[in-house]
Length: 248
Ligand code: ADP
Image 1 (cartoon, rainbow, N blue to C red):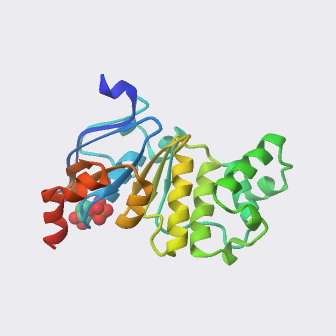
Image 2: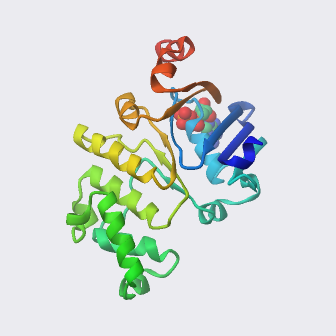
């Protein structure tokens, strides 16, 4: 059935906070290799949905499956991360006093201590992986720059690179272009499309211009459920979507 062939499968997911349904019978199906944009007004349940996928929040009811048969509701946050689901929050959390290369090496080393990770002589494979990540994240010529000295956009890209170092099959990205310049926003769309050639990506985003540049299927949430789904043109012309955006 549908569940077996998909990377991420949510069905009938519900989550209440003090009797208020933040997520209400939510269903979402993401294919392997797909990038999806999630939109919706404030309070629609976008963050709670991401929290449920990553195990930060447990749903009250409903199914959440990864790779067909892995029941994510039975795993905690750390286990879900190690299954191959990476999450980038809105605010970048890079190590400011380390350079770009060091940040990537630390992330590649995973749980190894900071000191042994930085002293560790990199293998040919590790060096190649870092080169590829630097190229993808447009940071090749910034590799020796301290993270503190990067622009806001470059810090966001470095953090995406740090997630890539952990090789996630599914990358969840929360409002990546908030605070970016137009040029950085356009570059971020290209960068995410490049990443989506080899991984699946879910992007929560308010910036409709950016969503258009992504050029992917859009899911609009409202009151914890899917209000409309399809191309951006289809979703933005849907009278129900127009109503929730204009009705505020
Ligand atoms: P979005 O990310 O789309 O803005 P959220 O998932 O943050 O929406 O929130 C959905 C609804 O659930 C909101 O009404 C919010 O106030 C409520 N909510 C989210 N988390 C909590 C919580 N921990 N306790 C109480 N209410 C919450």
